[in-house]
Length: 379
Ligand SMILES: Cc1cc2nc3c(=O)[nH]c(=O)nc-3n(C[C@H](O)[C@H](O)[C@H](O)COP(=O)(O)OP(=O)(O)OC[C@H]3O[C@@H](n4cnc5c(N)ncnc54)[C@H](O)[C@@H]3O)c2cc1C
Image (cartoon, rainbow, N blue to C red; front, side, top):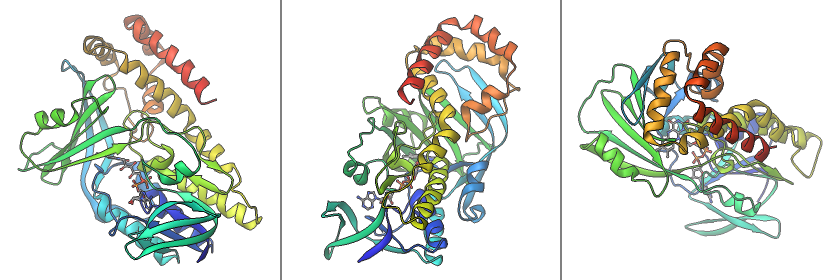
């Protein structure tokens, strides 16, 4: 079998990419190791920008709306934000719709087939009925946090985080709000509405008692899901005729680590790059993809990762006193869940930032040090 583009993984990044490539007239094949489409290990909290970028209308899959957020420090100091923050979407149904839309544009899919590597320039995929080899002009790894295509490229990702999620057994009203509770450094748990029930998710390092955090917040729950979440973007997403997109390349938000928005945007940039390369009959994928992604998200990623490093270095008491200083900003922040750092910085005045710098000098010094380190790391 020979295809123009072989896309490994049919999550939001892979299906968005496949849809756009098929629409442009390329012969696209998706392969996915699962037998059925749809991700259960996702809270489905998608910001308004993200919803607009999705290749399909997510309205039919919206479970709840989020119009306020409460951020709580380890000692219980709260900062509230309000606005049309996000929708909670059923990821299983959304992923299926997105794959169906790409098939309707002419892409094809091979389910229950795992990409295992490349042999003699051809991709090897294994299913229950045996192995197949597939020739391709371009290969894309949209195969998630433990990407096999990333291994082929010999690119190393930082150790992932662990995400745990449970659903309440009984109905609980959160009144259109969600709560984010800092547990340790930059690791946190989130409580959000799921129809008339609620869900609790938590994110931490392998060594953190993540499951215990969730069980403490929600002692009676229906089901527990544990999955990995990428730590940070790779510096490079492409080499020769192979590229990575979505979680496979670590395209996640630096603070919340949500990956749908950045992965779908990545898929759009990559689709343009592949179509250009195809039209010019290039044997490699031209580099506008990587440049466009970094010029769009670079500042948010570097400033956010620096903030994460500074938070990770702080004790619970220091975090409480930082929250106390940030109380000055309550009511002034117009929080955008898709650009968490830039939106917060943009909505405060320089005078307020200077005042906070005097009130929390240790934090500001740590932050500036971490920012310089990340600017250098990703330069
Ligand atoms: C608990 C939890 C909560 C989360 N909540 C949110 C949230 O609220 N908002 C948000 O934006 N993000 C959230 N995320 C992250 C989000 O789920 C991911 O960032 C997103 O799914 C990434 O999309 P993707 O298409 O890159 O990869 P995935 O959705 O992971 O899809 C990858 C696909 O590749 C397939 N695959 C893997 N390996 C192979 C292989 N070798 N061969 C063939 N197929 C393969 C898999 O079966 C899968 O279908 C959460 C994650 C977790 C764990």
